[in-house]
Image: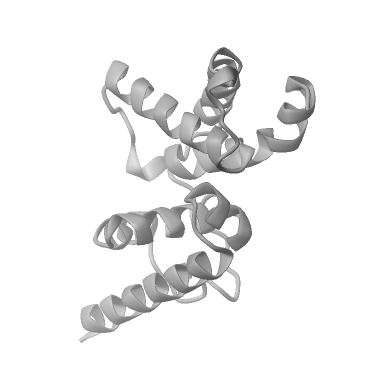
Length: 159
């Protein structure tokens, strides 16, 4: 597969992954471009032990970490868009952006990442599983358990 084909097939997945982590469309686009640049530079290191999308998302995550080290966080929690209401996020739709992010932050890291990717990145469970090197079913169960933990937290807060 040529780099052009790889970009065409995987750029949206990488972009949505970065968007879910950064909540900033411009930054996600910039980091997507940097991810593919880094992928070209290290293409000889890809050993095909994982899917190309998984490898690219690992590069994207590293690229984001490098960016954050070079640019101390100026992230404004108020700029995060509220996830769209759907049958999956009906319980979460009641929360403000700040409340939602506070609740998500309390979750264990792997659950939090799945929740971010699903709610903010609008990725399918299959895509999430590929990105975190787990099965689609694992991503689905992790999201469900995270949603249930958030639901319990909401009930505690209502008391």
